Figure 1 (cartoon, rainbow, N blue to C red):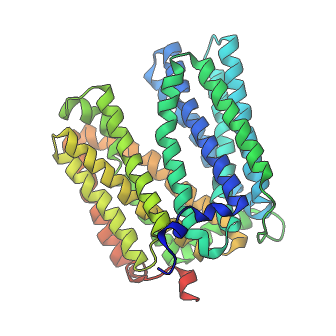
Figure 2: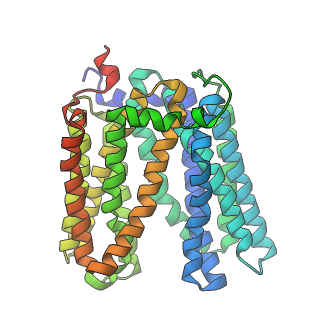
Figure 3: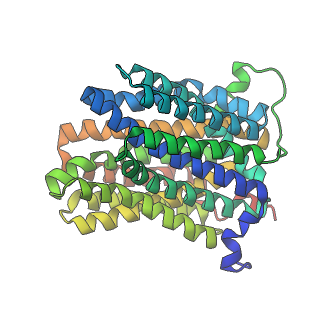
Length: 412
């Protein structure tokens, strides 16, 4: 590496558009994470029905799944900066509606679910646009640093947001929704200050043929298909984090505070790893790094299933978060570098579908497997299956294990 570590890190913030975008995204993530805590507590306090807690996620995921491919086409056809700003504006309106509900009082929870449907729709349009716009905000030589710093900021917000939401909820849901709404207003303002960026636009009228272009590209580009599907199946089988409440209660014999620590550790590992990657980006043997990150996640899952030590569980979850971050970092760079800018939004939409489906289905699979095999055996099975996926993908997609540099490095 020719640059100094300091230059490889936060120097990317010298690009005004990226600094504004990063600030807007971080503030919005903080706000949404705070809102999620308040919504969960408020809904359960109103109904005392566990099924309603499940509906919170479903109300957001269904519109996301229905709109994501169309949103990907929009990210290629229209100004991505405007799409991100509009999505943030919609999230801001959702926050203000939740604030209004808190002040007026609600006899039923369905208005909250209606707001969450709107939020899920906004999330669908924001996802591909935020993934695709990043490469337009910085010079190519700074893109890997921007990815790492963006990922670290996101994970820090994911870690801090729920804690702040729980703290402010002590003063009532009105306080949480008020603060989160202010943060979303600031996020909208900052995103509007980002100048229009040059991007290749999709040509021709919108049709199902153009909407599905991202799927066709991923299917025909084996290195992209291998990278995305690796994450899908690894997370599908390795979703042991969904079982942490049972693990904490039945195996580790710890209370809610201990469970909170367990849930926090993967995010801490991912955040610290992404900061390291911002200063020391991966430039060689990138395919092996990605496969190794997933393998670390799988091996950590097996240790998590075998241990009865709270300390060991914390360390393992930290390493699992770090391994997952390495895989995410390499995959994001690889997909963006391999994809032409004119279809980057649609390919990012496919990536979002794979990631969203793997998280949702992974939690479902873990629950079903635990009910069938038992808690410990289910976690061990998930870790072993993840390692088997890594071995299988090494054979099915040899281009991944052989890849030494990112595509843009090969062209230098």
